[in-house]
Image (tube, rainbow, N blue to C red; front, side, top):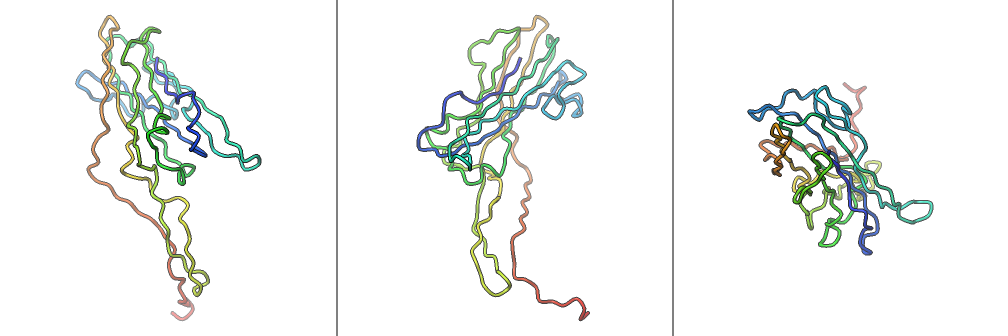
Length: 220
């Protein structure tokens, strides 16, 4: 059994609002370390696979402010996955952060708020041994998004500074890791955490306001 959830404690007092969501994806692997098929990934997009994995729930924590009351929400949920007949098989679990615009203006994690990371619990036959809880990096001082001020002309005459409300996903934010699960015929399973793959090629595009064109198409 695999469970992904956030701590039950509240955020530190100096954090006004907080929202975060992670998810897990599970692949059945061959003995040479290759996945059988990407179409059989066990995840929130594919709740049940032909190789015995069932997935349910969504791992998130929501302490964002409610507009009506100006009070923080206190919502949370967890993800669970169960793999039957795991003996003699190998699996690869990917845990990754789900970036959203709701995080755009959150302060980056500090020494206290970094403890609000999701936790992956792995149990074998209902029992959990030591060192079977996994977490992503703390990302202290690293925001999920990079928000910029962009120059946006208004009516072509009056310039204004318009704050881009979405910004970029911050490539420095480390929100992905992997856990390999190798089980022998007696269902004695070995777990090993692995870092996410290094980015080999990354392309970023962004559309920003520019000077309004005065070109009249009827003059062509």
